[in-house]
Image (cartoon, rainbow, N blue to C red):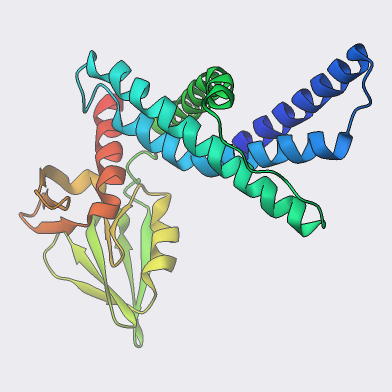
Length: 267
């Protein structure tokens, strides 16, 4: 998605530059192409930096968190704040750019100039936020359609233990946890197995079977999850089919929640 946003900003920069050149030609004034490019590129660069702020606001101001009536109020407060950041940071960046090429740029702030930019910034704020939100939902819908089906009974994982090699049905693995230079596989049968590999390598192998990362040192089989309990600190606890309780770090809680919601939708 960042590539899409950069592409849209690039198109906007080209379009605005062409419009400025056309306006200069119509007015009979000589166009200062370097100055126009610096203005447009600096503005686009700051919008790109502010995308993280805009996306965070749109994610937070959602019907899942706030009443519908409160959402417009949040954006009404956020838009002038974001526009002010864009106004100040863009001009600060221009000061740096012009100083780099041995020229000067007068940093000035006036409320008329700010309000002149504000009406354009309203459109940019809404456009960037809605495009990002739309792309997120589009990709989430695609992920739901592409969710891997539970592994077939013949799908097995080769587990080597010294001179012995076991072929373990993937469907019987409930969760896996890093243990030094090994990964401990917790089985439905109750007897854990040690596999000499890294969790990252195992995650790549079991990702096609639907396993999800729930902690930097743990993977879980979503088919084994019977309940999820959210904790106040932002973490969570999964209750598995064998009665085990496995903790989920706050970093991965949203991922497992989406996975469970998607599986419930497609069930």
